[in-house]
Image 1 (cartoon, rainbow, N blue to C red):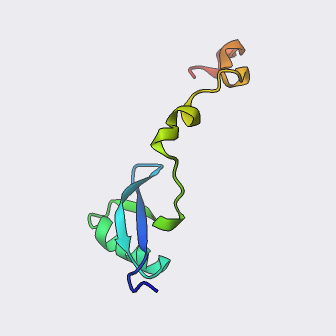
Image 2: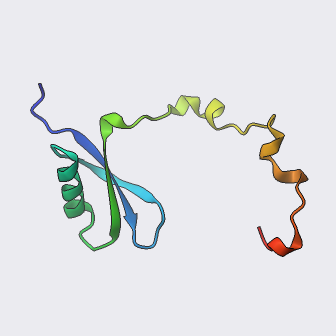
Length: 94
């Protein structure tokens, strides 16, 4: 059994943003301590309103070598391309 604490990835949502962004990593024994350490390390200037701490081992990621098949648009699914919809004038700018 390892004596090292697990690695956590830290995400902070800023006061003027709607999304969380990755700010760094830290070691902590549990989720509560990871949040506390993240607060102390990554929000010293009162810039955060929300903190996420996620164990690194729990993050699943795609491989850069899969980017073509994973991110290519689905041209055969015409319903994803709204070129044949009429937008009413009342809707305004979209």
